[in-house]
Amino acid sequence: MTGSSHAQSSRASHHEWQAVADHAAATSHLPLRELFAADHFRAERLSFEACGLFVDHSKQRVTEGTLPLLVRLAEACGLRERIDAMFAGKRINSTEQRAVLHVALRAPRDATILLDGEDVVPGVHEVLDQMSQFCERVRAGVWRGQTGKRIRAIVNIGIGGSDLGPVMAYTALRHYSDRELTFRFISNVDGTDFAEAVQGLDPAETLFIVASKTFTTQETLANARTARDWALATLGDEAAVAKHFVAVSTNATEVAAFGIDTANMFGFWDWVGGRYSMDSAIGLSTMLAIGPERFRDLLAGFHEMDEHFRTVPFEKNLPVIHGLLAVWNTTFLGAHTIAVLPYDQYLSRFPAYLQQLTMESNGKRVTRSGRIIEDYETCPIYWGEPGTNGQHSFYQLIHQGTRLIPCDFLGFVHSLNPLGRHHDLLMANCFAQSEALAFGKTAAEVRADGVTETLVPHKTFPGNRPSTTILADRLTPRVLGSLVALYEHAVFTQGVLWDVNPFDQWGVELGKVLANRIVPELESDFEPEIPHHDPSTAALIRRYRHARRKPG
Image (tube, rainbow, N blue to C red; front, side, top):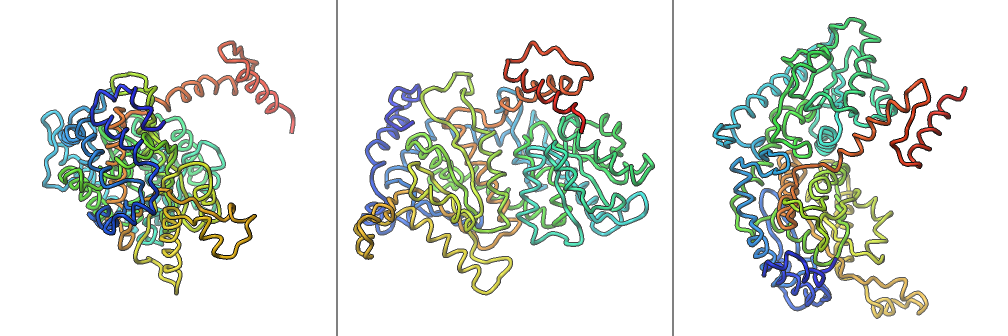
């Protein structure tokens, strides 16, 4: 939905909202070629640097007046008040009556963050210290399995944020990981995920991390029980569970019932949402991989961006500007997706991580007060792949398709694995793609190349496709922390402007409820009565049951 449609929005009560809508209608057609030609300092004026990140927004479809209008809109929507409320421990997750304090997970030991008058920081560092001591023992070979063998394989069992964060972080920071240890990750309840994850592992040398806050998550516990059976099939003794399983959970009763020693249970809090939890105890596998010192560097990067977000004026605030431009592209320019394109193989899982962070947070159709949103668009679809692979896949659509797809390009000055000309070639492609998207190639320029007239339309690039480029010196734990926090707070900013709650996820519940109803219908030895399903679902259940029971 474009800005002109917002004249009828309830948001039109904000003068500032209408001002942005009118500005979009008046300027969105202006080509980037003209905007750059008219402002020789555009690149400098629309580039920002902080927390180890250089962010160039100059190829976004904005004029000199766009960001000031968006900042005034953010102020009118109460962004400053909402930021202050989050950092003050207010219960801004209104549908669940919870505080939102993932920023406390990376606060330094001498910080104070209050929740209902109690400082939560000491508890955070108590868990961090517990994690550090455990990880040092495993990494040094002091912690041993039931047979006395050293642990050489770590398998994280989780789902959602309990999987996506650890997988992304391990992949991103693999350069810094202990190569003597093997790391595997299981999330899908599909048996194939488990079977392939444990392929080639020795149960006597394997440690499982079961990550479930309640220790009742259906998929996670199904995989955990299978892991338990797999380990005991070789190790035999039930006592082996305590030597080969630890838990990230708050449910000591269920953890103990599973056979895990609660001394090896690493807790976290209801003010930490799953998709905001990679720097909590959910990051245990990350700490095991890179060590406690580098894990604390990761936390330092998060904290540096937290402080930047909390203190820096909006007009120079990296997460605020990034979030405002996502709102501009989605709600006012009509873009339906945003592509995240890392030019670093280590960030191959970063787009998938962002999918949960962004879409589970802001994929909402009701406001915080419960009003159905019918008059403006909220969260876009986030997607992407590593850069040069994407160039030979979906970039065609971004360049010459009919859809407007803003892009985030991520790159680094230095490679962690320098090989000849490889990195220069990689980054040349990164910079070239954003240039081609912005400026395209006109029909006249194509003709000047001597192209036959019949091919001219096929080789013309319209350009004017917006992008942001984020550049850092090299991918370190600290930089990764800053990068993730940049997107976390950008998502928060978007949620404030769209007036949605980024911290609940009721949309994942209904499917789970229905699945729990269907499971016994699939497993029953007798033909179940299934009158409560629609005809399509009932027919699928019957077909599945009959096919499963055929011989062979």
